[in-house]
Amino acid sequence: MNVIATRAAEGFPRRSFTVAEIRAMVDAGIIAEDENFELIDGEVVPMSPKGNQHEVVKAALNRLLARQSPDELRLAVETSLYLDDRTFLEPDFILYPIRILPEDVKGTDVLLAIEVAASSMKYDRGLKARIYARHGVRELWVVDAEMRTTWVHTRPQPDGQWGSIEKVSPDSKLVPDAVETVSIRMADLD
Image 1 (cartoon, rainbow, N blue to C red):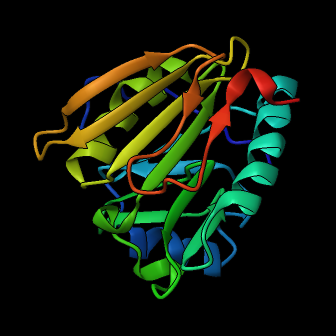
Image 2: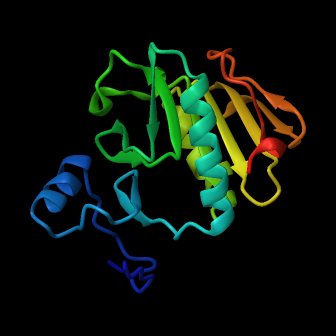
């Protein structure tokens, strides 16, 4: 289904939605289950279609993460991460304790979130990174699908800032702070 975005109401108040209202609209068939969007502070944000390099990187990461993740962690791929009653994101990957049901996962439960980006780089490294930090996600990787460079965000702050953001070259090994069994070099992905 195509989502039409409009800016016709610029300058006017907009209707804010809750996660519960969005879920009710999906249940009623008003919004298709396969529509690709996020809810940011009550506003529906349509997501761009994913290109070839995004899918190549995502598939390779999926294979590696599935092999390297410890049994006590759940690897969720393109899941809805409900952060509060007006915000949910659709990260490419998250790792969190397996004992937590998917809809019960909070930001502080997420040990690693990964966003693979091409056209969404500014959004993923900007607003979306601040939302992850504000909700206590422990570590965020934003991977440039074309260049394979990764921005590693650690030490989230309640104000939406990160204590550390490091740009990591494709040839360098990435190991999440909380999941030392995972070790990835983006240059090796194919």
